[in-house]
Amino acid sequence: MARTPTTTDAFNAVAEASRRDLLDALGTGEATVSELVERLGLSQPQVSKHLAVLRAVGLVLVRVDGRHHWYRVNGPALKPIYDWVRMFERTWNARLDRLEDLLEELKTQEEEP
Image (tube, rainbow, N blue to C red):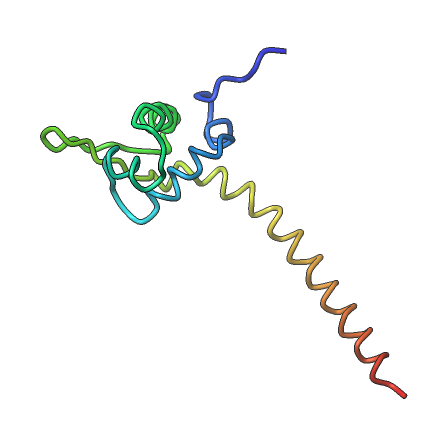
């Protein structure tokens, strides 16, 4: 079976850990490729390649200022991923709430003489 190209959608693009690291690094604001290389310890070609994938799916925007290219996260493009993860958040919160109730019940039983 052929592999799905990483540039088809945001889900495929963020499947690679280095691209998630790039998004994390850009989460605090704009950065140049050089700054990202320094922050992440990746080579310049690796950072450029991953940024190209993130740009292709719209997760990263670029602003050109003279010779510098400033990259930043495109928050609205992350919404489909956010929405998908929220489904799991609700499920896990419910499970953790049940676990907390069970632990409280066991603690109460343990404290009884």
